Length: 128
Image (cartoon, rainbow, N blue to C red; front, side, top):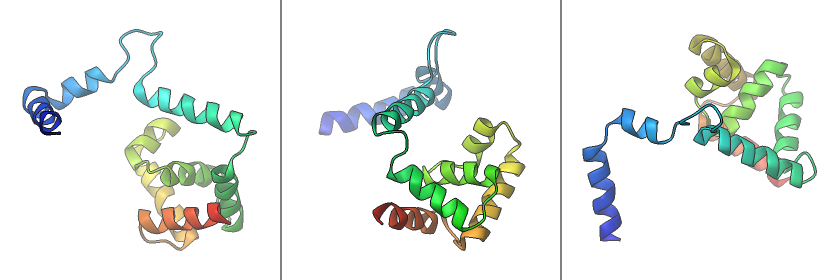
């Protein structure tokens, strides 16, 4: 355990943030980034579970029940997965300000004031 801590501290001392980004970025055109691999894993798992899992059904139910637009529903999905405005803006190919506006609209329509309240709302819906 101590060795792992020492390695972790040394890696933060020896490597810059740019170095860490390069380590997790694809080298060539045919390689997937770490984030892409995570998205692929999620899609494959969803397909194995019969198309739509409890999580997807819960998100759709909440989105429909609270009158979210199609774009707001997309933003809601990313927020429920713990993603922030930078990630959402990149994935949806919109400006950061647009992503923030959609996030604000989602919060207002769902009646939540924090990411934790949003996640609690989703957790409750998944359990039902």
